[in-house]
Length: 165
View 1 (cartoon, one colour):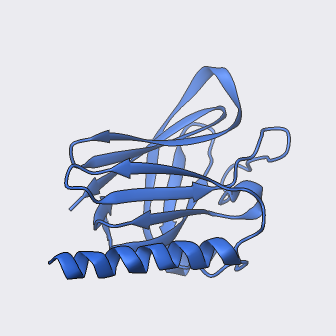
View 2 (cartoon, helix red, strand yellow):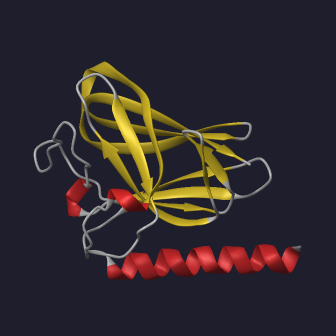
């Protein structure tokens, strides 16, 4: 069991390093969530500002021209779909009242979004906040077996619950 966990952690870290080196040379930020059993969920994203990056309603958003990347050491459930252990791209799709979050299995750098490679897609809770976030803020909130991804950009605040299996 310990050896299998080591191999899984090694593969995730190797994927994290490979995808990281192959992506643009822009600085990236990471948010993480530690599950109760010690497994972790990470998301890497480009820190952008509302002055340098714009969202288009109905179109997958790639902050700074690069999709967010999700790394998980635990099998997750999101939007009724199962997300296996591994690395994935994440695309928020803004809309006026409610955003959608897509998890896609294609992590090949500099490739266009391909809806056929989606493994999970769900509308996520979205609220308008009074104090606009001038830069992209991404974080996780952890409760029990759930890591809720929080995305703040401009006046939009979106929340996507991922549940560990």
